[in-house]
Length: 390
Ligand SMILES: Nc1nc2c(c(=O)[nH]1)N[C@H]1C(S)=C(S)[C@@H](COP(=O)(O)OP(=O)(O)OC[C@H]3O[C@@H](n4cnc5c(N)ncnc54)[C@H](O)[C@@H]3O)O[C@H]1N2
Ligand code: MOO
Image 1: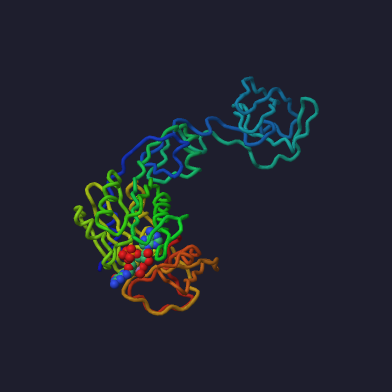
Image 2: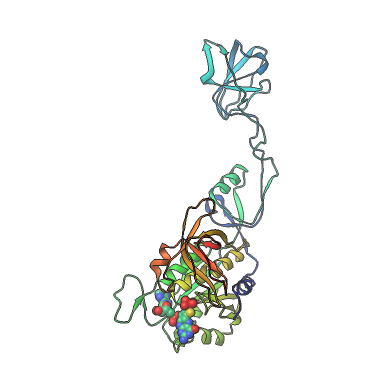
């Protein structure tokens, strides 16, 4: 069995170069920006008042000064700035060239058109032209766009962006025991939860998931579903990956010409993971146990989807302090469902006592995966460990 690291690099090698498309700013949240945003103007475009008050000359303080005009945001003062003068100014207005300071109105005494300032302080209250960014500045890709990024690009007067086309991900869950949420399960049946989780994880990573109808445990049903996945960038099957008589994914995908990158890895949960390529699509065969499927999706599917969009694949492990002793680990790299609590410096991490790979309640309560390498020796409370946030 190959290691998690080797499996990860083989999975990432399945990603093709992202396909660019143009989107308007208001459609760009969460999209992967793959070409630089170039500022089409300088910001602020002029020296701007940072306070409501009076623009004046520092050298002429404490006054008195004559108020000879007004400047507001969007309505500049166009007149002269003779010695002994000041103008009323509001936040965001251009500061006329003759003045070097804005004094906030709270500390100004005004009598008719005359003002005086007793104690001015040190702040000039002027935002200098270009102090945010200059025309031609480039906002570098690749990055998933956050609200603050969109605000910056808007201010740069970049109305459309080049982003990666969202990968289309077919989610194929199968098993004779499965019915949809909201149905009445017959004896022996359970609700299909994996496809909901995997589609959500795909969407979270930037993909456009397509959940296919549930497959039955027959080769014919699986072949039908694979045909429906035609045109997708990634096919993610769930279940049927193991060695049982009804575990048909390996057989059917092989018959459909899958070039296998690997099948099985030294990981817990998730040993029977499969990866490869069918035609132009990448394929991941996730194990059916719900926690195994979700952990494999976090570790392999999401990084692959991000790589398909030209983004850094992540996730990168962080450090936390163990809260209790752990026995020696087996021969597979173990991802334990755990909970973080704020610590003194690093957070503390508390693995759940029951790590059954079918317990969704534990997964829902977990906010992290504690990582234990294959063959990890016994650990003591207080030791530093790696984890992945969930
Ligand atoms: N003899 C062996 N048996 C098993 C092995 C093994 O090495 N030898 N590996 C075990 C491991 S590890 C895992 S993980 C599971 C993976 O099995 P499959 O990928 O074949 O998954 P299924 O058998 O189809 O299902 C397992 C389990 O998960 C439930 N399931 C499946 N799909 C869904 C879904 N969409 N929503 C909710 N639950 C689902 C299914 O009902 C089963 O209970 O194999 C072990 N066995
Ligand atoms: O992947 Mo399985 O869940 O290791 O038990």
